[in-house]
Image (cartoon, rainbow, N blue to C red):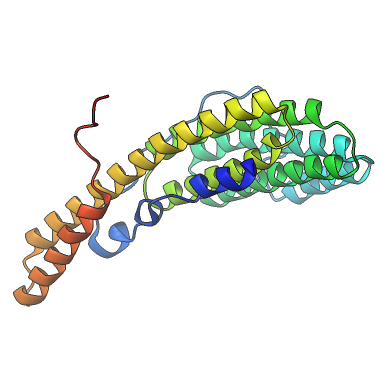
Amino acid sequence: MVLSFSLLFVSVVPAFAQTSKAEDVLGISTSTVNPQIPATAEGPGFILPDSPLFPLDQLKQALRLTFALSPEAKAVVHSEIAGERMAELRYMLARNNQDGIRIDLNGISQNLSAASDDVAAIQLTGRDATAVAKLLNENIKTKIAVFDTLENQSGGPLRSLVAATSDSLSLAKAKVDDALPSDLMANEVRDDLLRQTVRNTQQAQYAEDILKNTVAVLGAKAPANKDQAQKIKEALENASKFVSVPQNSPSK
């Protein structure tokens, strides 16, 4: 099944690239100053996540979903809410509001995941889900492209959050793609696999850089217990071999 095949490749992500404790333990900076995303087609809500009145906005969105009586309508509303959260994320990043960033990333992930479930629900009824699937597919692709850029701009905890959101969107997209016509679905699966290959390489490079920095810091600090420091250094150097990016690709 195409969904299962796609999910397999989505799950192939270097774990170390997603979570790094180097900044906390060794003082290595893994963050980027003021990561930004481009302007979005959607606009933010009237109340932003850093406002004490934000629960009112969440209540409004819940009411919209309550009055969306069909899976098609719910999928559209979920997609629109995700668009609002994406627009709000620009403001939260600019303000470096960590709580607001988490709220928006969770909102994007949860709503697009729910939208993909709505598409599956349409299919279960036997109705044609192609139109909704095409709409969601384009919306999710646009957001994934933004998160790929943001992930490469970021480091530390923000990078981990963005990577997790991107993975969630990839899973949602794989589910939506199953509702597309076979020719479109094949193209989407091909493009998704190519994207994931590039992303895995970038994550491996990031992990390798962190490991190299960690080794350098350990050497510079010259702790009293040099034997222990040497063992740690050797372990890190060995670990770096597993995430090293190949320097040359075989030519055909």
